[in-house]
Length: 238
Image (tube, rainbow, N blue to C red):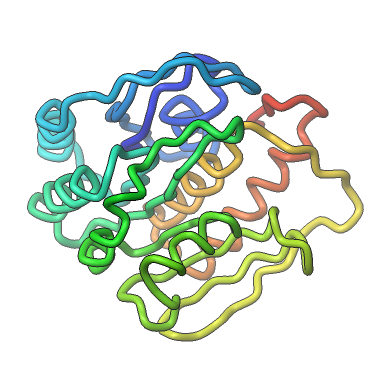
């Protein structure tokens, strides 16, 4: 299940997540946290969905379907994230949760209320994996945690690094694991929604029973294929 925003370009949010789920042969469900008007390069408007409606949708879907993994994307603030994770765990304590902490869009539109970010620390115990890019990780680290001291695992994506670009770092149980590129010959092109695609591909593999490290490695294989799909900002899933 994807709990994320609706992107009119189809490149990010729940639409990108559902495309990813389908390609990886898992059934996709979607709960919308925000309605946006955007293209792959410009952001116009955002309207947050009421938290009660979000929680009601989660309740309906999780009581109807056996949800194995949940990917959470854009949320308004720490309270939104807390209520969403509590609802999920109250229905199925064993479900795997992946949070892609989308703090800003590529076009610099702010999503998450950073004034509440210190409260996220109390939510992390209910989350299995956080997937920040390098810039988001530095914000989280400043306000929240060192990965090895935190209750959940962290995958630090390597696309924004100046050194070892493309190498992701997985912190799991206090252990640092480097996940290097699977493809050293193809050209990778920037893609709108690439963080959504990676986190939803990892959630897909967790739903299929992979352990966290394997899910991250297979998720990286999927995103690298996506990044080579064309030269445009909107990629193809295949």
